[in-house]
Length: 163
Image (cartoon, rainbow, N blue to C red; front, side):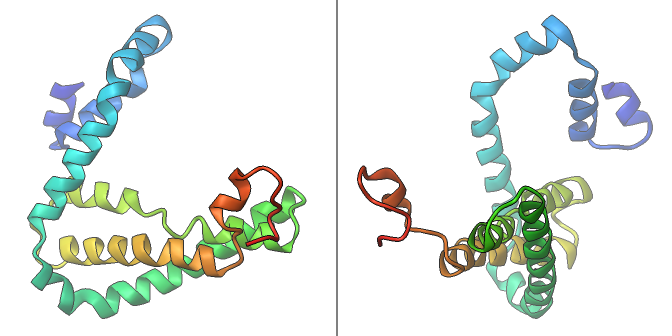
């Protein structure tokens, strides 16, 4: 698979993804057992490498475009989440929460930077700013959108309405 990825000028990450897709049965189970503990570590290293490759000063010029993209995609994520929750019979508050929790999901954009190249003059900083905006705004919008406080769901004797 690595040779095939190299032949078509794809990254090693794409080759590894293809290998992961081809593993099945006992080989896949053993690979998961070995690799699962390393997954979070490698993900953290990957995000650190992306963060090191984009300068904060490069984020400022692309911030207006990143904010616009974040607003559009956040709105579509909220609508999508609400629709999915409505199909499952959730109430209004649950539908809103289902929509807003999707806002923070943008990690795949970072993978795109890794595949395309973080050193691209405009794309790397734009995607980094976009993901940063969503990572900050997503939890805030979810919280302001009516999600009950986390502690109220953990403490015995409290209801979602008590805060």
